[in-house]
View 1: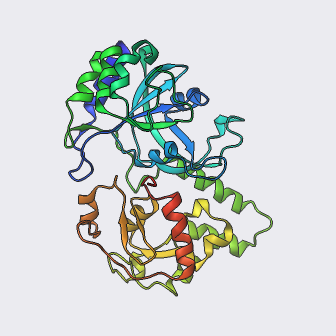
View 2: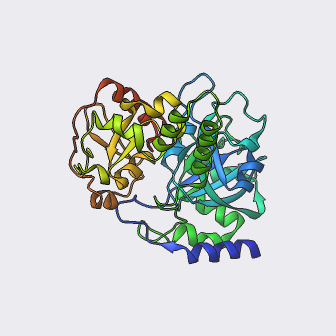
View 3: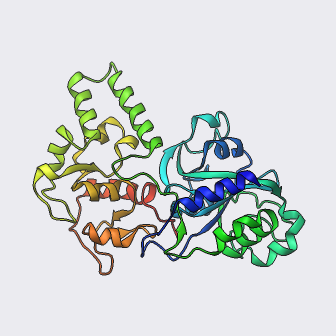
Length: 355
């Protein structure tokens, strides 16, 4: 109980208003992670591949894309709800963690990650002991456990559950938590916010640093090309010159002074090969704030130029940055190369689960 109270006080200290327009309220999620429970719970994150082994989309992976800071995540492993946590970040594209080792050898190396501040329950809760209470409030579709038995639903890695499920778990395990799950509204939500745009997520920064070291130590790449690839990471140098031959201004803010623009990779630099990192068709000229929104998947573009907004994006902030959220915003069509890379962005970066 002491640890729960400490966590409760920490969460309460960090209560901040979730910006109006961010979403209706905190959402509740359930992760079944038997194979990776130790690594994820201790490491403070959840991770799943983006696709099934056959390359097809999986609803239980897609839902991870819509987690927002402050959402609650319940951890289920070994037939028990082991703990819970608050999401610290939005979802982001990230390679399979090294600490998984041989676990999931057949999984796609690319995946979705959310950083979560997990806390163990004093006594892990077995849904099979309370299956009659869980059954009527479980989702009718994509439930994390089987209503008739209370055992985990095989293949259901990540599911959204109702507030009623969250309150039942709290009531059966740690009643102290009921206030956290019951008292907060859209403008009064416990949220552990992710770093700002000027403080990149540690996992992404580590990934990019690793890629840069590979480039710097490569004997197959000339010194000139190595320098161009490193500058391209910052949206500058040869890459920006090439993008500027096709783009003359930020498509959203219309700023056209090169000093205030970066060449933003459509397929992120960290996920591209060396040719793609310098390809003109893989870039847009954007102001830094729009570059942040695009790189983190809060916005994307349709092939006809319409701006598409993620359901987890803070619409008030977007409006202040020049992104219209009420009426459609069209920014002009793209060439075929850009359309190719935009398809990747919509499928692999944009924060909206595929329907």
